[in-house]
Length: 216
Image 1 (spheres, rainbow, N blue to C red):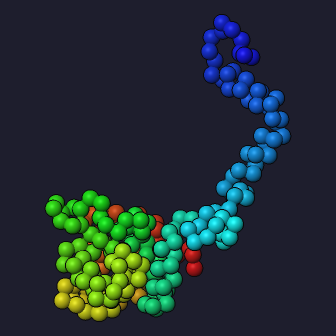
Image 2: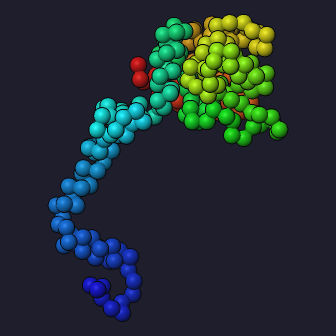
Image 3: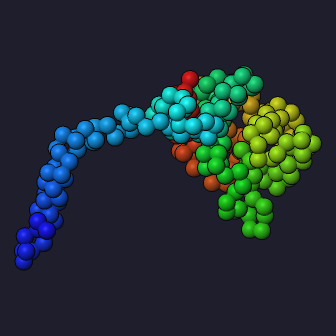
C-alpha cells in the first residue's frame, strides 16, 4: 500500500522501501540484535544429538570438529590406541576412509565401477573377494556388517594378519604407514598401498587427513 503508483520498478529502491518498512514495524535495534545473535559462533540454539534432547547436548563443535564425522572421530581415537599409530598416521588412514564412504554415510558403493557387481562395501569399500571375506568374518563374529564394530574389527584384522586374499598387503601397508610423519604422507601411503582405488582423488583424501590431524 505504501508503494508509489505508476512508477518504473527499481530493485534498489524497492529493497530500500522494504527495509524501511521493517524498521518501522519492529525497530532498527531489534533487527541489529537479531543479526548479531544469529551467527554460527554466537547462536545460543543447542545442537541436536541423536542420543539425547537438545537441552542435554554437549559443547558446540569447533570448526575443526565440524569438518569431520562422529564415526571418523571415534575411529581416529581407536586406531591410535589399538594400532599404536600417531595422530598424523591415524589421520591419514581415517581421512581415506572418510572419503571412501562419503563421510561414513554410505557403506554401500552408490555407483559400482564394475557393471553388474555388488560394488564396494564398508569402511574400506571392500570389493569382490574382499567383500565376501569381510561379510563372512562379520557373520562368524555375530556382527552386523554395517556396524562400527564389524568394520573397525575387519580393518584391523586386514592390517595385522596375513590372509589368502590380500596376502601380506595389509601388514606391509601398516608398516609403511608407521613410518609416515605427516598426514599427507600417511594419506598417500594408505591410498597407494592399502586401498589402491582406481580413481584416487588424492587431494580430497589429504584434505580430510589434515582436518583429522588437527583434532590431536
